[in-house]
Image (cartoon, rainbow, N blue to C red; front, side):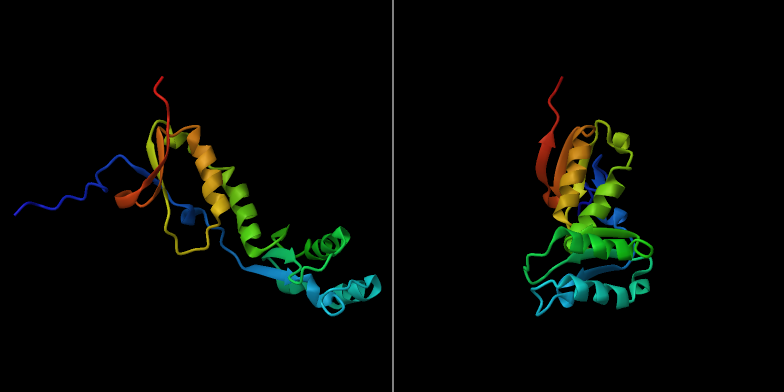
Length: 169
């Protein structure tokens, strides 16, 4: 019987796993519709009173996304005012959803990676993840890798989809 050889483990493929960069920390979403009349109407005086009485310390060292789930047309200053309240407590604040928050976190982290270690190498961006890695993170890392890698694939080594191959000079 022939010995089974793990060709993937013995290949020159470099795996870029975005889960390795997943920022640790609690993520929360603040829905400002809770402070709107019937979830749709912003009355400035009432809105400011709600913000004044809210316990902002509960967001200490957390990542916070601010949004309005009802689709109400809310003036820009409302979200900014919520962010101003969060500044002394939150690690990061974005306008949008938790996915928008994760995208912003990844954008910041991935901009600091030394991609030169992938110079002229075949790289596979690992596709399956147990953590909620946003699509934006995959797009960001592919852009950075394209400046260095000989080729870029997506997925798992056994079933990778080719994305990029550097032209021969």
